[in-house]
Amino acid sequence: KHMDQLETFVEGIVTTKDLPGLTDESKKQLVAEMSEQLIERINAALIAALPDEKVAEFSDFLDAEQITDEQVQAFIANSGVDVQKVTAETMLTFRNLYLRGSEG
Image (cartoon, rainbow, N blue to C red):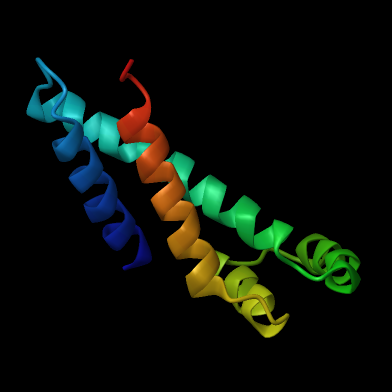
């Protein structure tokens, strides 16, 4: 569900960018790659937002077992990080970078 929202967001960016000669197939590929990049950036931003005293605990949490993205997000949210705010800021930054990328 979360991934679908991100892909829709990324697709909007790609459409706005309006790259010349982009086929449907290559657009799908581009959206998929960019969505992966965006998720990595969001995760990195969320981890960076963790309070210092939670970082070691988080590291242990990650080492403990196979955990899902949902569990990771829950841990981060329970650590006092404003997940929605960090996610929204990361998405906006990503969008601005991409749209500005080839100008000038």
